[in-house]
Image (cartoon, rainbow, N blue to C red; front, top):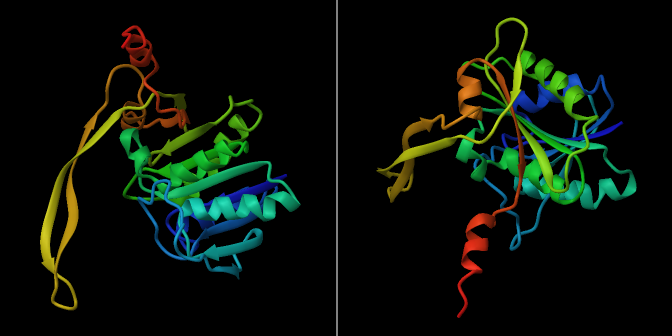
Length: 248
């Protein structure tokens, strides 16, 4: 089995190293990841600057590369070059340091990696570890269990699985979930940078709304691993059907 692993925390992050180690027991792992932290990159790609790719050594990986690009640049490069020579069976993203719940999926580079792979017809799973604290050894073991659950499933076109793993004690339990609602009370703090310029730093308070039914936020709050099938289909179909009734 050929496995591609990427992330948005950078190639030296604890999460990707733990995931690589455990997945190396399943198949041949290739790592392609950003050279540094690229969180909240969403689905950004590098259109107006070159991407530098360097070979690296990552324990457990048969080959590994760091790039100067975005998380999506990494998977696009891997699928356009390495994949064509020897196709990957699955793309795994993470393990992200922090949750990717609810509307966080719009900002997440971790989720975007899996989404890009799915758009290109490759099965994909995004893994995130909810914390702090973080125990990536346990999260990696859980990720392998979830991988073994999902891999045999035939996913619909453009569909991938977003997994959020809470800090667990004892035997993990998991559930299929819908997307909850996560909002932020945005705050921009005015500061001086190292050169004495006025700059703004983003921050704010998190507001979780579990929502109705079995949502990802509710599952994680109850100590369960959340598995959410996602796809990049943004059309509000019901409203579109209503609008089509109005003739000019």
